[in-house]
Figure 1 (cartoon, rainbow, N blue to C red):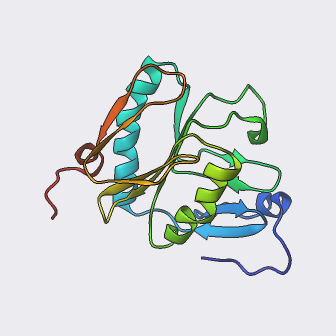
Figure 2 (cartoon, rainbow, N blue to C red):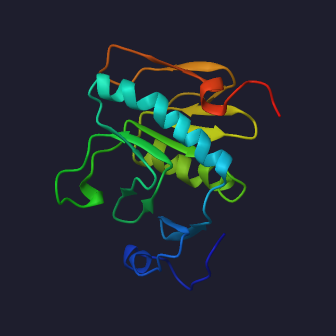
Length: 183
C-alpha cells in the first residue's frame, strides 16, 4: 500500500504519522504502509524466534529483536520482522544501533515486492547485513541472501554460521512452518 504525497518523504514526516496499527516504513524517501500481519506470518516468525534465541544467547551474539525491531539511517527507517544484533546503548537513537548480523522478513501479499526488492537492496547492499532471510509461508521456503553470494532457496534445512562464531545452527523448515504435510 502506498500513501500519496508530493515530493519525498523524510524521517520527520514519518515520525508525525499516526499510531493506527499499520506499520510505516521509509526507504530512500519512499513511504510504505503495511497492514497488520496474518496469523501464519506471525506463527512462522514466532517459531523462528524460538529456534534462534537459545543459539544467540549461548554464543553471546546479542539479542533476537522481534515485533518492531528498527533499522534507521539518515534517510530510511525499516522494521524487519526479526533481527539479531547487539542491543543499542542506553538512551541511544536507532541510527547509532549496531548493524544486525541477521535480518528476517516474512512475505505477505502486500510486502512481497518490497521485501525481495528495495528492502533486500537496503539490508544486503547498503547496510551490509551478513544474513538476510526471506520467509515465504505459502511456499514453505526461506531464501538466504548474503552480500556477494547467490541467493539460496531452502525447502528443507540449512545451517547458519554467524561471523566470528565457531558454531552453526541447523534450521529445519518443518520447525518453522510446522509439519511438512500440507493442509
